[in-house]
Length: 546
Image (tube, rainbow, N blue to C red; front, side, top):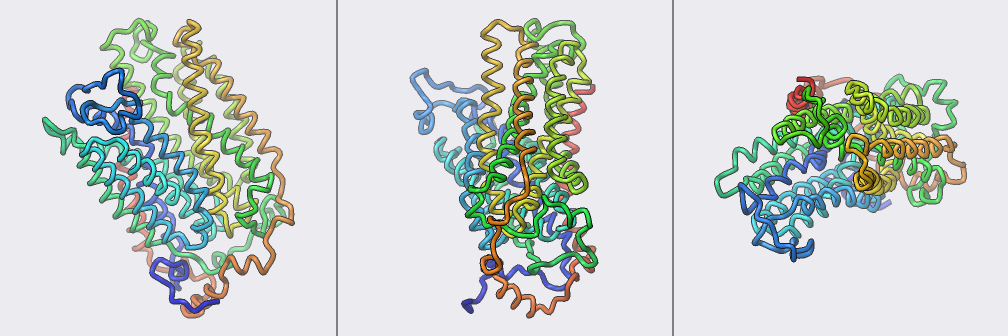
């Protein structure tokens, strides 16, 4: 082992000292996830960016201007469909960067990965601001789409293995708290961006560039604070007085050993979990993208007490039902976020495999029920079904890191989770394509708008059935895939960690004792913005019930 001096960002420098409180880790993770979660809310910029030159009305490009020309053209406004490519790139690069650099993250530790994530995400926003100033869309794609997408991937997986190691007694709850932040980021970022654009907008400027700059600065402060707050426990640390319950000790689905990330693609259980996540996400993400038009087209004038179908409504009535649908979308976002914490925490009691069985069986039944509630005109059942479905969509994201830790061990779970997120990238294409193209196909057949989603719901139910089969086939990982003691010691870097622990003189189990005020301040720093975002979302939800 070399005697090199650890740098400020090195893994060895963040071994926790005596008195460190493990409850400081979730708000550190939330500080990063609430910022990168704004990826879900970028659509708030599409409309003003589509009028970046015209301001009041878009200056449309001629029919001869294709997508490639739009990347460089400066004389006309971008189409919303063109701007949407940034959203696509977010999740493509999130999945690919998490897969490519997950192993690097485990090697260098969460602090360095979190700092790089902050630089990429916020630096990408600044580069996008330059793209807006120069009206060069290729710069925006490079900035937020590519560089920002890499920041998304690293920021998303940076706290996973750390939280699981600090909370061996509550793996699901710990990852649920962090990943809840990614779902909640848009609830804070979208209204914040709206308010900032109002402040900066002028008669000749939509105010988007300035908004990007301010939000990049705010996000950088929060993300760096979170990254620099990360700490690692010494190897084999457990909470004081805690021993694995008898049920867990005898649960063959929870291993005490560890799989190296380099072998994970060879293991069938990984691909089964990949299928589980892909099917769960595909079904949910397709609905998220079409939730607003779906409600409007299915119920039409019923949303405002008018006995007319969607095609029979005038412009004023269409505006009114769009406001109601916005409330429905906001309601779904609350269930998406709440489900991440609720289902992940419940999985600590039910077990990960049983939790996913609930997701797939209940989800499939709810999808099958939706055409019936739509035909009957029962808005309550229709909305309730989607709320539960979206809670399980979010719950699937939050539960899967703990599922991976159960199957493959905790040593390299962050890197393995990164590999698994390729399923998200696939689902991000598969789900919307199924929902959108099935809708167009049904409309072209002349089927009324209120019925065009019926077949789609059955297809989504079938996808959940495929996910159920994958989940039922999951068995404990064979012993041949686990690292031996020598390989495990090399990965853990036991010598370095033991030196740090010895220098700190830290006794076992001394990590929950002090600094309750600091813990409260840390939680307040993330809870206050989240509460503000929830408040703003509830205002929109009120439009649905008014």
